[in-house]
Length: 515
Image (cartoon, rainbow, N blue to C red; front, side, top):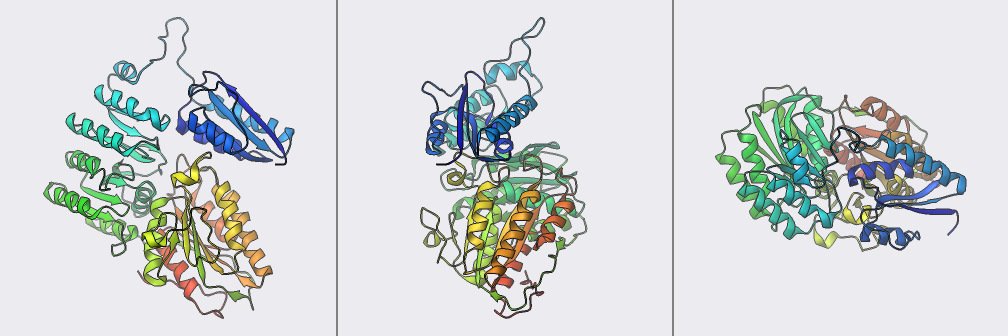
């Protein structure tokens, strides 16, 4: 393996996993760095480092910080360590132990006792430790958002039953998005306050609905994430029921929208029955092959609270000369958001038939374990799936996996259309278009060099108040040749239309399939 490597362990330097995802992403973007893992030295992370060819020193443990780097040379690694120091310095410093300052609390319960007015604890520790910390918080009288993943489902059920007994709420595990009283937690867009409350077993699905509401001038009271498994048969909608009752009791919430990945049918039926019994109207936005998309759900919500729906914007690509190029028929999707991938697959499958995936709508459509797509026909990948993020930051932070895969898919002679999402907001990459736009432009040019036209469609999820600048991001992506949509469903329909257009259709055509 060429290049230089460097592994360091910092004993006793603990940081939560949310912070370390950001740090790892920043270090991974340093010039000349090809791989970076900045994480607590849990057995899983030590194993991941070894898988990268960067074994941790013996004796490293879960309370130690592991920094594993690979770069083109020593200078690149020195630069990466400078980025590391800056990023770590930017994290919240621990409370001072100097004169007059109390020592930092050693347990969640102790922290809760010190912050008497706190109502919510955010747990972001390695998955095997999350249940104990969340249980500690519940017993201290706090609702909990569990950002951690890799928590066994039986522990999730235990936590949610304990929360119900105490009339509290557990959001998660693997809950990446929430907005509580205007405060965004995890990945969250900057949205205006307003009358719509969201209950969401879906991170990017909730972000899509909130962003479309915001674009129509309608704000959000709270967005209570549940974790993607909540409406599964195993978990049975335990937190969905708690969250619906909580928003029903909230005077600032006039309408509740329940957003979910495809749920277990019997659980969806039970939750719908509860929703119908509440005093606050509840609108169901449950994704599935025969259900409305999230844009339709957002429009219904806007109109239900008396707002005026604004059709989601679209930015057309910069023109380029593709006369005489061949149009290949296959659509490939590369998503950072699992729910956005689910929605796009549902739209595409209605028109194209089977869409292969690592999160297939039908088990028969699953890609092989190596996720090879050559010869697979239409396919879409959720690059944020747990199996894809082991040892690296989420693709909403670190786009390296997607950039590599984009080049691979664009070189496939069967591929004529690429569809991808870009999710903005707090916690996400600070400037995704700065990396994606050059990669997209290069992919389009490379395909043209092979005599093939490559169309790119982007679903851009964000608000005008997001820190990345929604319009600048859209302009950069369109300038690179992408058709950009604020609606994920509209982007999927546009991609389908391009994939099914005649092989000799004019280059300027960018038709859309009606909703």
